[in-house]
Image 1 (cartoon, rainbow, N blue to C red):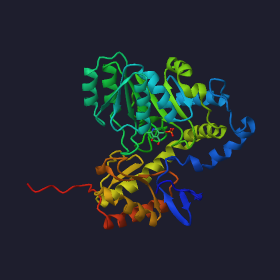
Image 2 (image 1 turned 90 degrees about the vertical axis):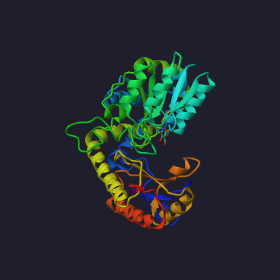
Image 3 (image 1 turned 45 degrees about the vertical axis):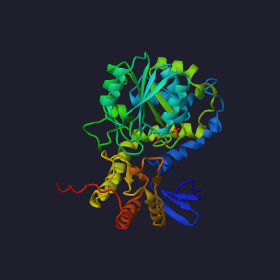
Image 4 (image 1 turned 180 degrees about the vertical axis):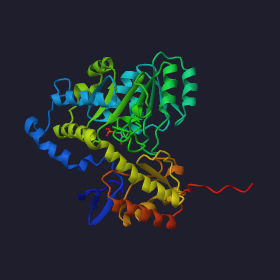
Length: 393
Ligand SMILES: Cc1ncc(COP(=O)(O)O)c(C=O)c1O
């Protein structure tokens, strides 16, 4: 289940050669890639703007960028935002700018692209140090010992493997108290989780406006990074930051100066996606929550462990024996279930397993297939138990 060539799709079913599989490896959480309202919005933009602007953003940006940045800033409730093609490009350019020759404190389980940004910062004179995963106390200890003038803390929002969100208010408190800037990559949270509301339709919150709003935090001392390439099914990404920092990044971040921009079709699907999010986003998230709950309930019934404590739509299933990964992958594939395999050394041996991602576009029949196949899997392989038996004293 790696490097596959997908010959055809039909909704969230994919065809590889002559085999159809239900896709549980997609990050299109809201199903915007298949939404008719979004698809039909694109041709009009192509008629007006052609396929690709091809100026670097420094040279000129179609007014579509202004519209996206204004609407995005309103949605997030932040001062300003800057759109660049990908999060990877943002990490590699913004982290070194923010770190200068100071210290970067990076979560030991941060996404690989954050690490790459930190390495570039190190090459330009920053010191990089790791703190323990989800451990704000460990971060605080390191910050107390540090003497540098510039301090940057880098971490994930909704974690792409565990499916959980960090204790953002506690990390924000620690960072603020020690004069550090908190830099959060919420690639998976944006679009899925958002501000809490008494009338919310599900515990993901409302509007999908990301992890800072989900925790009712302010943007004081926080730079939020997110992407449109997951929930919004478009090639674009953003930094939510004060206008002053945005102005600085326009001259200091190489992708703004030198990279090609997002294709017009992607800018169009971002704008149409923002429209759909406003009109139907909360209903879609409620549906996503229900589908995810069915899978989590099934794991619980089968006594299969997952680190997911949140109910968010990323569900990792670690194996009891890391050597089984190839056979488990084949087992799932042969029964028509496509997931992301997490093999050693990409993850520690104790976490080798597979990741299921649920999207609103997965049908009830696909969810039922998954539940059925998980039931068969537990009869054929050792998985980690959800409720380990108490050891006799
Ligand atoms: C947490 C996280 N950050 C960054 C990325 C990369 O995003 P982009 O494709 O916009 O570079 C991913 C993609 O998988 C991700 O999961």
